Image 1 (cartoon, rainbow, N blue to C red):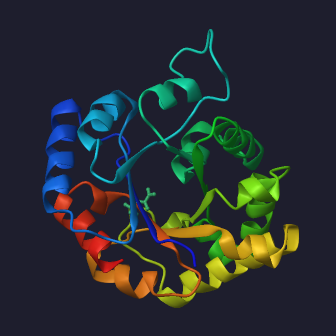
Image 2: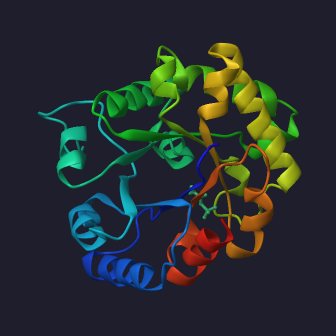
Length: 249
Ligand code: PEP
């Protein structure tokens, strides 16, 4: 039985005061839930968030990590730094990193390996663009991305990581994949993992859906057989809507 995992990607939102406000609101209203909950604030808020989250049952994640351990890499943040700030998860390969920072499957694969080697859990993002969906190559794109981002990662580690299927056309657009479209993509990703490893391994991998998830559509998505959680952007910035998604889970 796979857990349900709900992660909030704050992107470049919330300074320290806003971080405290949002986390306190989440803590005050969060009911006991069987879903695992993760928040991923910007780097500058990580340590403050970690202190505020202590004892809350909500885990902390970062939105990216450097491939390098230390040294002359201006603007980058290492895995050891994320660990010392209290993170246990790291999002790697978000479509905005692919689009604005040229991250490829090979880079994302290296980042995922780095996160795993450091004992943290990567949330590895994949997903097709609108053009790719319209051209009918979604299955090919998802197969290539899944194969590329997992290359060389042993089964025991693949079973620990999270894959986030995020169709790029659904991110921040208000257009959600239908539950059928999302389930079809998740089933395909799981079948690719089964071919690369084994069905036993594939059955253990948590695959989140991301793309305009909100309280209104969370339940129908999260009740699909192969959808094990959500990576949430816009709707995680307000305690009410993030809690609505958590409660739907
Ligand atoms: C995201 O950026 O990972 C995301 C899913 O954003 P949104 O929920 O706003 O579509």
